[in-house]
Image (cartoon, rainbow over all chains, first blue to last red; front, side):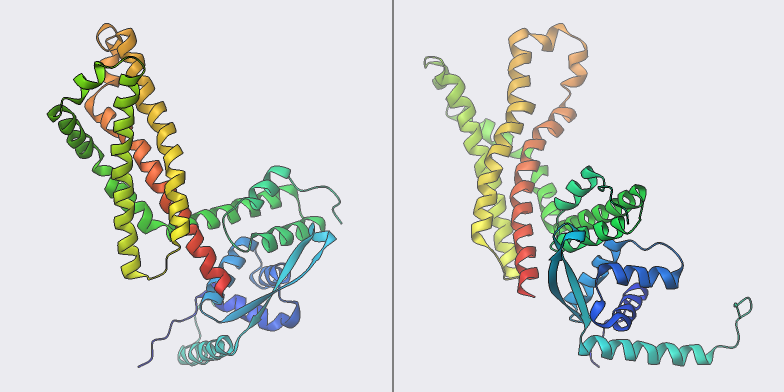
Length: 111
Length: 220
């Protein structure tokens, strides 16, 4: 059996946000995307920490953009999901969907 | 758009935080700040970034910190060995036959050499263990760290051991002031004497670990 490391909840959310944002996936829009869906503040530092872990696992890659004046001359770092990252996202979706389908309707679940 | 400048202390802290991606993070925070976020928000984000960076930095160096604690625990035993060697060869008497400042220089010079031998032997042992487990090592950085450990040891040794010991002896405070008995207790002395070693060893291993992490990050 091959050794698989499963995605954490926050890592999965970040991968989905990066996939959704496409070419414009860098720190600010990723954080905003997560805030919009989670309805609470997200620490940009924690997003970068998670992206570093994902990059170490080769699930994302990053490239440096051009520095801009509104960022104090600091460049943006763009992220893209790799093939392996996409495979793991799909696998996680398949497993979660299967598990959710087995459950009866939960009491107190918002409709 | 917020044209105010972000808190300069927070900006400075971000610029000096360990980690390879801090420039992009700092740029993102500045971009958000200029789009209308508050100073409180900027500080909150900076605190979180600092906490994450430093906890990662410490986790990365956990083996080095543990090794430093273990080696530092042996310091009193080592000083006892050094003291016995000094007594065996009557070094104190020989030094005090010399003209000033040679007794002072020889006594503390010998102690310094002995202490450096202890520190660098421990670091060499750590090197061997590290090589046998991970296989990656930047020898130049280790040597640079070992050289950096020298001023750390000298400064702390002078501040915590040499100067207080000479001050107390010179003014006879150990017998005349009752409160000194508690300050000069064996446990406190054993703790204080370990501090220069702890920071000297940690300084060396900290620098070496940061270079390895930087190399691995650049290699990706």
